[in-house]
Length: 171
Picture 1 (cartoon, rainbow, N blue to C red):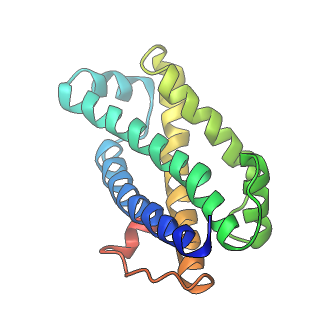
Picture 2 (tube, rainbow, N blue to C red):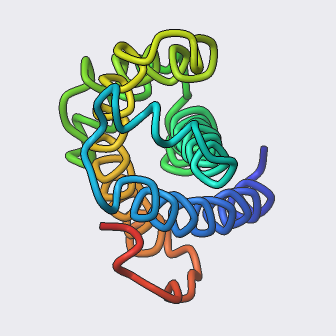
């Protein structure tokens, strides 16, 4: 991909991630507003249509943002910086060396956690409550990392990005 289409695609992915970060922050606040995840909390959540919908929304938004961040944004940033993207672990390691993310093993663990959220959904309340607690904590890390990568694209790659409507969404 040549520089101009690459930067246009990068801008598109950042636009999608801006919205995903905002939506993930919102559903995280709503889902975990009154309690930390535990089996009793989870049973209460899935007992109502609103609670089940909010839980489903969190799982979907968490998964999509992680996929777009790791699989799309990081690969495009590497390409725009003149590097060849590779496997997810290699790309994460490069971004860690750049100083924009830390603890690659934790990120890889979150990829496995995402799979558990999607595939083991509602089968085991004890395990799912624990996994949701991990996902809740990681959603903040993911939004912070996205904010740093977004700023890298704006400053280092001179990508013409407008300020987001709510910069706090990314932290």
